[in-house]
Length: 244
Length: 179
Image (cartoon, rainbow over all chains, first blue to last red; front, side):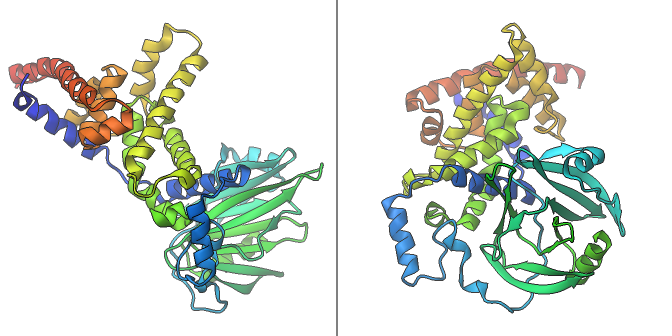
């Protein structure tokens, strides 16, 4: 059969390929990146000689380049008190998460999130088992096209004091609590690790990958919260106060 | 690519954005069905973990897509094992992929029918047509992705097109009759 006879079919297949060609959602990208990061922490890949040389080169002065999974986050943008970064995204993903009902979330995590938060409506509930006896929980709220995520971590969960790759951190007040507003550096992801110790003393760590502002605080009972979304900081703080 | 090899996560995110669609299309056409998103995620994770051994001058895309093909094969076998019954294989092929709620939402009726017919072809036919025409890979890239000799890519492509054409033509004839 001559190629010309298949010409129309080949064109149709090309059209089909273009019809199937869709960019991944930001959430899909962040999930994959978080999964990749967590996988390296479980089984760290042995760095190649070339990679080690690159890291060494970076250490001696190529500060503008990102050269290592961890080191890349500690770039020159990490100076405190820089201008507020644009609100571009959120932290609405872990590497793995289970879709649950509101009651399952409450039973598992001990946290009863509001189904309405100002004009925001809870859309999805998720949990993530961190240790055999502890769950992290997340609720995603929507308002029009905007999304807002609230993470809840059990008492004694410890997040990185200085997450890698951020733009800056500002101390703000959320009701009675001192809170931190973490801002991204422009057009870059940053990673927040949260560690939890189980009843046997084993420390487990989960990562979330963010590309937007993240407001975190710890409540009196030791539970910690993180709120992120495509909203202005003032609004974020006001919403956080409704959660306390 | 060099930045990603060095572990720059933002650069890795760029790679994900750039190659995700091709990886997902290949997973779907290779038969991953509802597992396509999991297959793609796992492929990227494995690629990330293997970056240290990756030759920066080699093309990332064929390398990633080869991982996708292998994972899809394993995913398909795994689904078969989970199904437990060999005779359900054909049914899974038809039903599992036909449901495809996460996968294929095609607006054009012509695309939907072509996709349905493509899915009825044997695995290797779907893979080679997927690489060559859905992803627009060259014969050399397709050979690298599928791990076949280049001559096999050429001959298998020709046979697969013939098979698909045999499925498509009666439908087109029907369209002419009813049109």
